[in-house]
Amino acid sequence: MGPKEAEAIESSVKEAAYKNLLREAVTSGALDAAASKAEMLGDLVEKVQWDSEAALALHESLYRQKLSSFLDKKSITEAEDAELARLQKLLCVPNDVRDAIHKELCGDIFSKAVSNALAAGVDRFSMDDRSSIKNAMEAVKLGRDAAKEILDDVARKYLLKYISTSRTQKDRISSAKEIKKMIFFSNLVLTPVVGDMKTEEEKQAELDAIAQQKEIQEIMAKAKEEAEKEKKAESGESAEEEKPASFFDANPTTDAAAEEKEPAAAEAPKEEKKEEEPAIVYQKEINLGKDMELTDRVDVYRNYLMYAMTGDVITGPMGVQMVAERDEAEFGRLSQLGDILGLTQFDVMKVHQDLAEQAFKGQVEQYMTGGVLTPEKTEALEKLRESMGLPKETADKVIKGFQNQKLISSMQAAKAQGSLNLTKLLELKDAGVDPISVVSKDMLQKMYRDEVNAKLSDGTGAFDVDKMLNEIPKELGIEADKAASIAKSLSAEKRRVTLVQAVSMLRQKKTKSTVESLNNLMACGMADPNSPPEKWNEPEEISDLFSLYCLKEKDESKRAGVQAALGVSDGDAANLKDMVDNGAWKFGADAEEEASFF
Image (cartoon, rainbow, N blue to C red; front, top):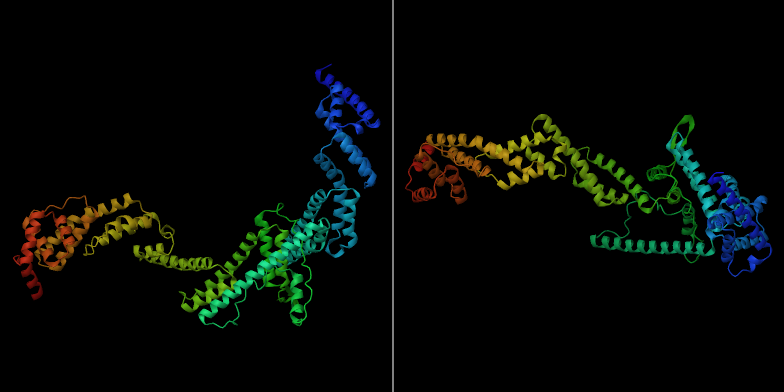
């Protein structure tokens, strides 16, 4: 015989011996009378040298068998319940193990009773169905927590059926109507059933929470009203001026029943005070938060919100479809739908804001079709934003987005026509648009090169080193080393040619052109400050160039820049400036006189 076979036989014999000892202890009353049941059971296990874990499993099995035998008739009597309690105590079955066994065996019977009752649906659900659930729970002595869990499991399957059916509908209206059935099912069927399983303390706590929330809303509404009155008083507006209608035209947290009762309450004489009816507390415990992805739940809510906003569609004579007047009660049902879908307040708020933003985008697009936003259009959009309850930051972002689109379109048109330059591109950058989204990196470098070339050739000498070599490259996303390389390359190309031009203009006695060429030569030196000055074989002409520049330009910083670009020493520069300032240098005066003569 193998070891496993021997072990199995040994365990079987020990189990039989333990059962005999246990039976004797129970029937004799010894176990009932024992001060410590656990200690006596431990002694019995030791006596037959059996495994304690196997003994615990046997105890659970015996308790399960006893409960199963009682449930053959689908109920447990008070005497049987007492017997089960005694058996649990004798066998030292832990409470959590007992609860799990009851949930499994009793829960199966209760689950079927719940499913049969809920199957009646909104139209046929009655007090008898409601009572059958309560009776089934009491009949099998199922705990309240276990009953809630089982109800939750069964009810969610029914809710998911509505979702599944809504997805098979041919259009959005039909799909929304199926969701409306689900809301009615939750409100009219699940709400009373869930309520039956709550204690009076839980029900009162819910009512207190609603009353507190209502009080807070009233305080906030009053504070807002006072703030609006003060604002109107400061601006000189009439206090009675009506506030723009809300984009949703309804309070999404108000239930349909309350809305239907508002007109009657408004018509009641002021001196009569009717007792306030208790608030309707629709169930929130059973929801689809763990059965559907958030995106799917949000889509269901968004579609129903669109249905609430647009209204139903009625098919008239000859198949003509007409949009019926929307039912304001749908906005009350939206709040209940959010609870059924397990959406948070943030989720709901985001859906409303997204739709408001979508509608605002459509209006902005229409307003900007004719061109730029005029002050009148801007004011109209601001009023529209307030009526939609859209945050100003979001509205500004939408408007800026459309403005950027138009700017990008104009930039792309300029690019196609070959008229796109760095100035226009930097305007686009200031508007918050990435230049790379309009032109390629190579194109950006070419435009930067053209801009540097222009600054080295415009005759002003106004080459802002920090702006041209640091700020502009950074805005365009060009590396600093690359920008410096481009500037250095252009400077090297233009220095010799520019000096030749300056000498040529000097020889032709064209004073203005000479000064412009010297400004360009100075700019070349600023673009590449480490480069040595260009050599010229005629020192007298270099001196004349500097003297002429000093005659026409009194700015010492510019004089110093041209001095460096021409390679004039400090001593020579000082002598030449003295000669010019004292009027001893005649060439400049003669050139000026000849230029004015011709």
